[in-house]
Length: 293
Image (cartoon, rainbow, N blue to C red; front, side, top):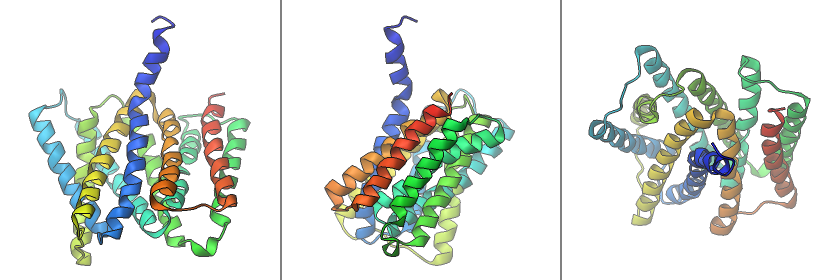
């Protein structure tokens, strides 16, 4: 491969995770519109899950994969579905309870946890530079959350952290056990158990609160399309460039989400929160590079 084509190839390899990050950012903003229109978290994830399962069932029938997952990998993918359910429910609850910018920034502790988890499991190594940048990132997060903490929902923060933990395990397991598999098949097996779980929870809770206006339904459609596209592209990216480069590119999501929440939702960050967010995002990027040394 010539030197001239290498940068283009690298950019091509990174396009799935970059697109996923931007798509998730738009989805984050649309969630606030959906909630404001009367839809609750359980109704959202249940209805979205049914639509996504139907979509992938049709897609896989029209264009069957070259190979389905063998029994062991199928069980792992089904297990990832339960982790995906935890990630989605925790994140959506956090967005419903917190300003969207704070919820997404708190959730984005997961790139740090991915690197640390990789080091603990032997998938990766962490030097002193990586540990230092991780400490700086945690300090930035603490500064952001510690400002006017009385105005924040601790349940929302806990949901964001739980969603991050589930995402970490999912990323590491996908890379370790499902590398090279068809991303559509992995997504299909992950969506079925998570959707069944959500529907069961909604039935037990007796909750069904769909959007009340056409604007809400349009926002819900955007959430469904955007989150499904992003989830599929994350599986593609994890197989193509690995979980750590995927996590690095996904740092675009909180940055773009904060900018969109300020511009479109009228949310604000105090000066100290803005400094904390900037420190955290910068340290997240430096952490990914430092751990390569």
